[in-house]
Length: 357
Image 1: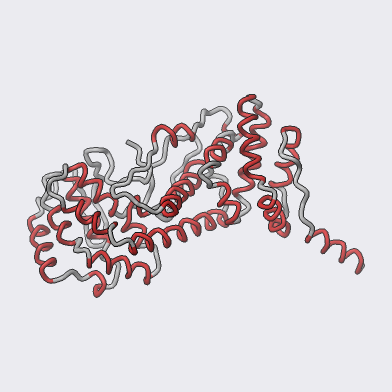
Image 2: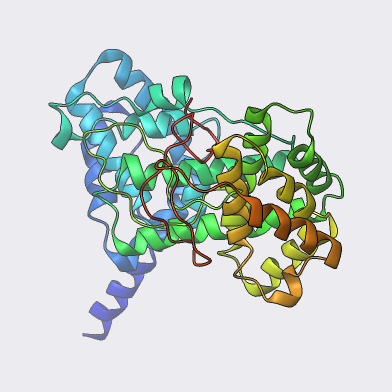
């Protein structure tokens, strides 16, 4: 009995032998990754990372897709879905690499349960989604994390909304949260970024669209745009993908220390003065975005967000003179609740890191 127990322990500690990433082994690879027991996941992850298995699988997928081998494409879908469900940060870092993500998303298009539908997520990423910087970010690592958060949200809400279990969903949310902490920290420590953003919000010489874009970068938002897809369902709530998308929305979900640091910078840069001028603009989109930004500052402690006396007077005047809402504008309260739905001139009050236009 002792010998048998020892053998079981040795088997658990042994690293699984991954088949060579070749077409003839795809079914075996899929069965190994999908059916791996929980107690052997750590060893499987270790083998996948040590052997650089993900890049080899992406290369193999490109070959199989060129050959239009449908059964093997279905195996590759199961393999990459199984890698996502391993819930490992190291594996996610590999899957979300800029040079691999296109192949990963491509393999996840071949869901055998959706074979009767045409799914082309890569077309959306290439032709519709785009990365727009209202204020340029000079740090490549920060831009990489912004892109990574976008891909995390895209996989959760569009590519695999039906397949993710609670543990995987939480693991992906954790990646987005940690990225957001680092992104906000970098932007707060950049002496020029918030200053230039404040100048763009208050620049009277800019067009209404340019000012609207600057406000949408600050605006809090709760749901990302998703392309039409047969497997897409109503997205579950999740963290906003990046501050390049809606900075105040990201900050609201961080810890108190990070929120306080950001709003101190927000007040120091004098954002309330240009925001007050936005409330007097003739464009309803600009006015509503300005109000949304102000509402997003209600959550932090008053001593952190309290504007100077001069800024407060400048802010209260426009609020009192804000034109009465029309039938197309919602009623907003201090709690951020709204009445009737509203769509601005460009059909959206928000901007995406990769906004669909």
